[in-house]
Image (cartoon, rainbow, N blue to C red; front, side, top):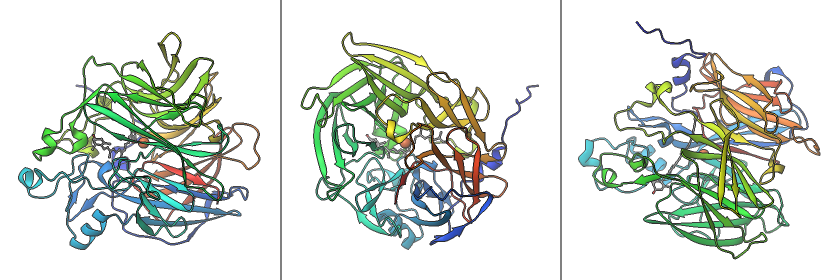
Length: 488
Ligand code: 3ON
Ligand code: FE
């Protein structure tokens, strides 16, 4: 007889977050159940993620197919107000009206009626569920395979699909992972990309002004083409480079066309295949106009990067590496996933020697992690600290239940845990206004509280992750994706 090892969580608590958000709240005051909200913490914490997991009795095949729902928590002089809204995408509006599933999802959700009803329906439903960021006077809800949706930053009302003043073509891919350069090349900017794939992949790298009267305007724009297919979810920046990791992965769209699988289910890792780093010179930097560099990447699959920086003629990239692409088969039930059989994310550091074209890789943490960030002022520079979501156990794959601060030079850690009944989401490090120390500020996290079957807003001290305040939301927000902080 095998005895299942003890786990720091209960599966039903974890899975209880996969419910529809059935309310849209406006400016609801939140009061701390513990602690005090710092008056210096002024601004808005925006979060995006799937808000609809079921329609007409049919569950999504994977949470990443759920329609985007934005939660905004506004901090003003020690008070916090919550507003949440679904993004009024074309698909959401049509499905609300029909009260039926009308679209297939990229991660395997199918229209009712079986394979024949899905075959040859190649529309991608832009569900605006992956990230939410401020750009000028717009709030952008992002989904990487198509244009952003523009929202009102205050009311969260959907203004509509945005082509960013004519920068994007209709339906053009626009990443959900912009990087905010705090001003390394003269002025603060949002650096982001779009990718067009096929036997060759073309990356369009864009830099937008983020401050001043022309905030939101395009400053730099270049396109580079590389051999091979690429699935690029995230990237990293340094002052002079945009760093991409082309995973060793193939895309065979046939099962998508014939109605068997969602498009993302047609991604498959190439056994023994080698990934590559694609380095594109930033046109705001000192190598403007030069050609990209290509170097070999270590084995494994990467969705997210922590950070990158330059060190002489080395570029250093810190990434969360999985042993393999975590595929989601057509017959798998996401709520029943066996965490022991799924690859875990582990933080690695790759040193790219651009002169000798050699890459050195080391593990910099042993604990399952996701959603890692550095102090926003250190974006693109070497940083001492990372904040990230981790599993409760020191090793092994489990859901994310704790927030960890990692000292990237010494390996020292501080941890705040929501276990056994809580599950964390992407932690967001916010600097204290006027802070000098890299770890002076707070960490915000929206935690799924399995005991309450609802979400808690947790505020931690960024230095030691001691609890500053906990606020219970009158709302159940499913396990989400990314978000951001806007200082107004
Ligand atoms: O060729 C096409 C290129 C492309 C961009 C194929 C395609 C249609 C599949 C495609 C679209 C990709 C999309 C829409 C990707 C969306 C990704 C998404 C919503 C989220 C990804 C999240 C990744 C991670 C690692 C999340 C981890 C979360 C946890 C461990 C927490 O439980
Ligand atoms: Fe992501």
